Image 1 (cartoon, chains in turn green, cyan):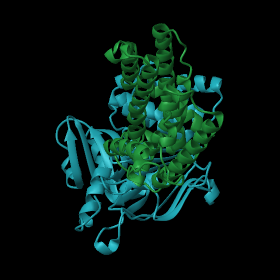
Image 2 (cartoon, rainbow over the protein chains, first blue to last red):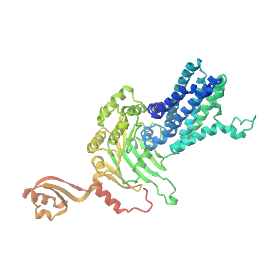
Image 3 (cartoon, chains in turn orange, yellow):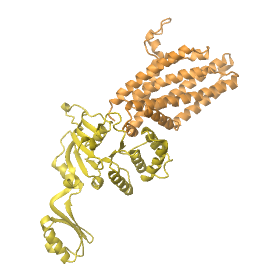
Image 4 (cartoon, each protein chain N blue to C red):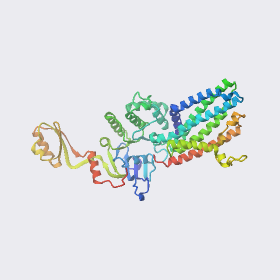
Length: 245
Length: 315
């Protein structure tokens, strides 16, 4: 387990010095600051709309960071041969992948946490209410980014960074529209539960306009997250194991 | 010598990247070599000869098609087998946003070194490879030679029993190359088994006890460097003096080179005594008498000329 944690820490140390991460945080912060000044805010339900915007910002910024790190890390390390030093030191390939994924997951978590704190603070100042429900959204977004990161990284064990980035975006799109694709958009028809999708992590309505979600639902999300990540990391390991470096 | 006492044992290594039926030859075929503790084994060959592929198979970076790979008597693919191996890849790179100390710290943690001991060893290693006071510098500011030195430090971290170098002097200036040679000699003295891949023949010639020469994925020659390079029946003589060599000497010379007042020439072993006496009598100063040996460059060129490249050779 030690190699996994050591590699994760190295990924975090490297990632927090990348400009892309800080640019995303600053950009998301600026957007959150200007969000309350949007014209549509004058006509009721302003705090609910703000929460929607805040979650969207949280989602977009973490997606950029996740894909920027997950799709590029492994191809970059293989291309620059920085991975040789690790793998020749008796680090198993699964440990390298698990450590890399964990590091990216932690960095994404930090980005989400930062944007959550900023948006809650802005919501508190502008609307006078503590929007702690945004933490629920942050948790769901973080779990989804863990899955997206695992997918992007799994893809990047075989193909290049650009293809992996596009693949991860397609995965997000399909993951969120698979029920619609399956049912053809028909009302009162839902896709069977055995069809894997990312829709479970979409809690925008529940958090923005409702009272959030239950503990049981959080547990269900967590279970789905663990299953997704385990399967994707397993596939990544199999593919990476078979690859000559 | 038992397999357990060997630092590295490679037996019948083969790597195929496609079907030989469609005309794609193996990148490596039937390569065997062994490295004892306290010795330096050179792996030589031109680009595409299979040197790096062989090293990568040993280190688990490339899956071998066949062969036995052992490190200190343990199959190299087993967990723990490579925990005591240092590796310097060709032109090593590291995450450019980290500092030299952070990279070494990462590897120290992977090795499970105690934090305090690791800090001491990192400082010591940085000094040893000529990077003292550079520990806190981000690697983005490192030159290629400095990265090579850092790679060397990473390979030496944890005092491994076995070290694999792939082109260790690549990118280094002459002083750096000399330092690398000194370090390799030190390692040898400490009982470390060193496998050194290079196409810098002078480097191999300076430090290796034994060499294996690869050509198009196969072992072309193997043995002690003296056995491979010494020219049977000839002696090399180096003398200093003015004017032309005496006629009695000149008549016996097989090959000659003169630079300034120093002459280097080879004669048949049977003529050595008479040639030396004549030179003394003529006032020449004898500098050296050694068995004649080819440079590795000459040896290598002869070997390749003797076995011309077939079409479809591995590149």
